[in-house]
Amino acid sequence: MSKKKYYVDIGSAFTTIQSNILLFKEPSCVIIQNGFNPKLIASGKEAAVRRHLIGDEQQFINPISEGAVMHYTGAVLMLKSFLKKSKVKKSDEIIVYFNCGLSLQQKRDLEAVFLEIGYRNITLCEKLLALKPYVASYGNMVVADIGDKHTDVGIINEGGIVSAYSIDIGGATITSRIIKTVERIYNLNITYRTAEKLKTGIGSLYANDVSRMAISGRDIITGVGKNVEVCAKDIYDDIVFCYKRIIKVIEGLLVVAPLECIEGITKRGIFAMGGGSQMAGLEDYVFETLCLPLTIISAMIYN
Picture (cartoon, rainbow, N blue to C red):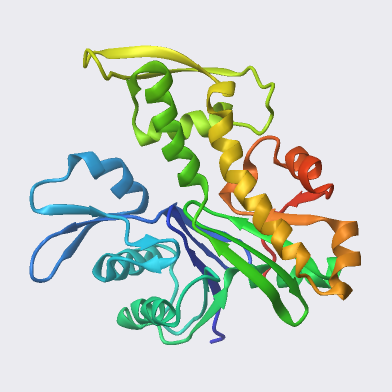
């Protein structure tokens, strides 16, 4: 029986498992029963829903942060559950994507998680290289992978990664800033989930966006629940702050790019993937700041 090939991307926010199609995508989190031999209570979507209902002897864990294993046992239990749900056999070939900023020890920790649960046929690969199949069509590419807590920016060609930078900024950075902004403007405490809704619902890189969204929270003075209507302009600076940093990194990458790469990059522009690439107005913002077109890659091609 021939072995199948699977591609696993364990992000801070979500874990995806793909073959030639997307098989699995759920939040990268678990609830475990504390003890000498911790047991899995829930993983993924179920864990995210139940996180506020856990008992005294249970623990909600996000075992991965910025691509690195932060809680080994939690990562083992989470991956074991996810791979079982995806029906990945221990004999199958697995390509594990990681952020380009990981240290050698962090890569070893990630590999050890898979070995712990019995998967031996694994290959670790920098996530930017997931776009190598596009190189055949586009040539040299500048790629930005904008994740939840981490962004990788690099130039890739047929030989692999020419150069790359990694920064600790992403969608979670925006969400955290939105929480503080709503507190400052409206004297309102809101949950992380509410801030996420604001970011995805009315957040954009258009300075003149007049979209509005009604939200609920707790008044920081009276402690009483309160409803307010937030305008897109209120959170615009929070969003721009993060994307300005990403643009600065791209500019730095272009400055040191080999001359043979420049012509193709000038014609084809920048390619972006990851959850942060879905921000409204990103294409226009990149063109206004870098004078380069932006192509959003929402579907991966795997060899």
